[in-house]
Amino acid sequence: MLDLLTIIFENNKKKNSFPDKKKSENFVKKLFHTLFIIDHNILNNVVFFKKNYEKLKKLLYDIFIELNINEQKSNDLTQIFFKEIPNIYQTLIIDANAILKSDPAATVIEEIFLSYPGFFATALYRIAHQLWVQKIPIIPRLITEYAHSKTGVDIHASAKIGKAFAIDHGTGIVIGSSTEIGNKVKIYQGVTLGAIYVDKKLANIKRHPTIEDQVTIYAGATVLGGETIIGHDSVLGGNVWVTKSIPPFSIVYQKNEIKMRSNSPFPDPINFMI
Image 1 (cartoon, helix red, strand yellow):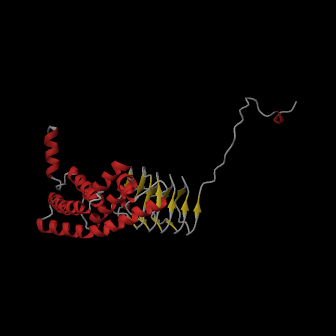
Image 2 (cartoon, one colour; image 1 turned 90 degrees about the vertical axis):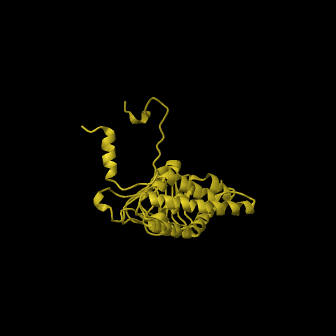
């Protein structure tokens, strides 16, 4: 019988090369820090940015090499990715301002950069999504799972999310792989945008919902199904369960019934006959 180390070795020989997980996490942490570093001395900021930008290019290139991508293609993919960084950055600034405008607890945009887990998760999603668009294997998932581990927000890298996207509080949010989200959408903690059921046969089929522009989804809401569309300018209340499309300008909520329990140990005497 083969010992465990031999079995592992034989299995690994059959697999493609995978990048170092820690290296991918280190890359995205440094990239986030470089983009959103707070330094009021602009000269130092420019020097810091240029120096780190080149280091980040080299780090991403090395990660591609670990994926068995040849040198020329690794270089090309790295250049394409960093060419898109200014666009990603501008979109994230719009996202941060959307949070700042809607959250009365936020005072300045730097507070969003430094302390809002929803913004951190959104930033890492947008970075991972660009790599997904470039058809880079493994790395996009490692990045979004790193964000998931740090914030509790699970956004699949292939989801499509518009501008001015705001996550308030984060924690427990799940956004499935074929989800489509428009502009100026805000979601709260515990929201799930998922599939009605899971089957491997559905791998290439849209199974997650579409959320149109200017929709607000409150805490604990669940929206399921690839054909489910939440119309623009709608509001989904807390804990609602939606599996069918909702027209624009809708308000969806649960109607709660509150019953008061009497403190008296005896029933009301009017219920008895003597």
